[in-house]
Amino acid sequence: MLIAVHPWDIDGAKRAGLRGGWLNRRRSQHPDFFRPPDATAETLGRLADELLNAAGTSS
Image 1 (cartoon, rainbow, N blue to C red):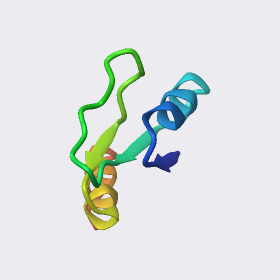
Image 2: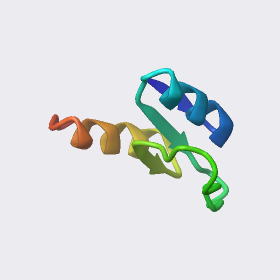
Image 3: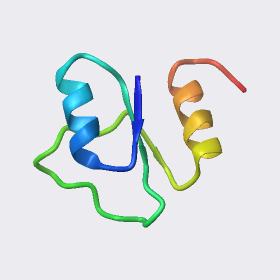
Image 4: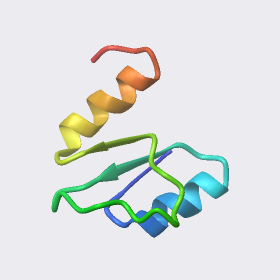
């Protein structure tokens, strides 16, 4: 799993078979030409919760 603020980093992780979380503090639009993240949030705590929920685990 990779947590990043840059969409290109998440794209690389997804292409390598990892899960990716986007820390989108600026509320930016994710570029359509990159693979989408598994979860997106504006804070690290919320992103962790989103990823745990996606995995079927609660915090």
